Amino acid sequence: MKASIITIGDEILIGQIVDTNSGYIAKSLDKIGIEVVEMISISDNKEHILNTFSKFQNSVDLVIITGGLGPTKDDVTKKTFCDYFDDHLIVNEKVLQHVTQLIEVIYKRPISQINKDQALVPSKCTVLHNKVGTAPGMWMIKDTTIFVSLPGVPYEMKYLVDNEIVPKIVKEYKRPYILHKTILTYGMGESLIAELIEDWENSLPDFIKLAYLPSPGRVRLRLTARGTNKEILEVAIDKNTSLLNEIIGSIIVGFDENETIEVMVGRQLAKTKKTIATAESCTGGKIAQVLSSVAGASNYFKGSIVSYAKQTKIDLLKISNETILKYGVVSEIVAKEMAISVKEIMKTDYAIATTGNAGPTVSDGKAAIGTVFIALATPNTVYIEEFNFGQPREKVIDRTVNKSLEMVYKEILKNVD
Image 1 (cartoon, rainbow, N blue to C red):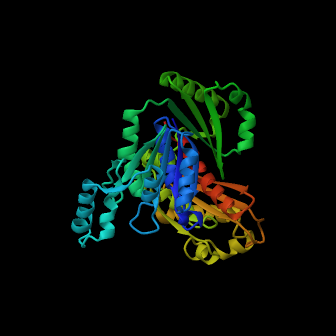
Image 2 (tube, rainbow, N blue to C red; image 1 turned 135 degrees about the vertical axis):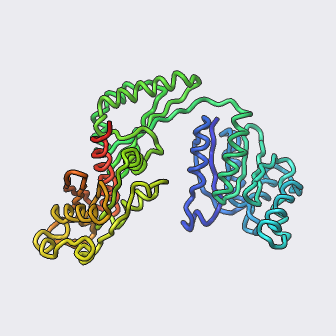
Image 3 (cartoon, one colour; image 1 turned 90 degrees about the horizontal axis):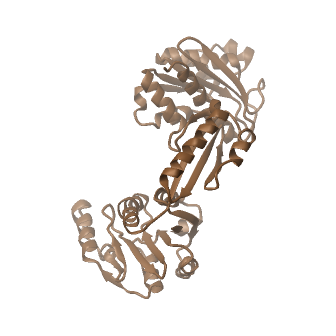
């Protein structure tokens, strides 16, 4: 099966909100073997919507639309559905009962006619019951294409995808298998990796495709296998992953798309019952943010001192003014003392410290823009590395965060049985 995803809303087209719905829907469809071939965003305009429906009619098997199902006049999707399918709106009693319960019992206010109109649906549609909101989903078929309309509110859309659409497709339609294997690498750029694995890549079977997914400081390699025999796909994926590991195993840190470096660091810290803290200058607390984003991080992450200004380094981390004047804020010795100090203050096993010139202007004359020092204090010693991450500023910060976590992860693994 092939699918297209349409998001409706002027607010998306003018950049007022970011479309996250399409990504969620695409991942959900991919997991059940449906290939998404196109995603588009269009305006709240009846003719534009109708033209888009016609474009996808019989060219894909499934079209999922989000947005335009609200109770206000600018939400036109339901009426447009009726025009496209030569249908009319009727009251669905089950939806009306649900909406009434939600408004009067949960929200404790009188139900209005606008609220009641949420129960209007095309007479020919299969209603997808939305237990977490007032706008139901609508499932309709024209010739060889299924059209599904969902509310644009993300949590309502997710509920309907997970509890209505995916189960219905799995039950009623036969699909091929699509398997993914994501290899996480840190510390080497995309072009260098491509050179190292060129022969391996060229020897991949036709049903396995490789994609490079680079970001500052890390590259994800995604293997995608498509076919009708799941066992053959799994064996081929595992075999080629093992061969890849023999070539670039030194930079591979994980094998799961959702296994971010912060999750892996957290798991190892929890496993070894070790703790960590950060002292951040150029990263402005972003390492702390990333570490604390993992559920259960309070078991190993003890806190951070964001010493962005020179005086903060002096006052909180006790870095001497003489040291800063002699070596500069962006220096190996300052990074080292920051790591040692925050480790002692927080009483942790490990500590990360960052100091650098992220740009775009020079703030410390002793170091060029893009220069970063990362210090890692361990139970036994302190490691300091110097980097030049270039520009722009956002790239410098992101690469510093990723490199810091990579250094921690590799250090912890040295002491894991």
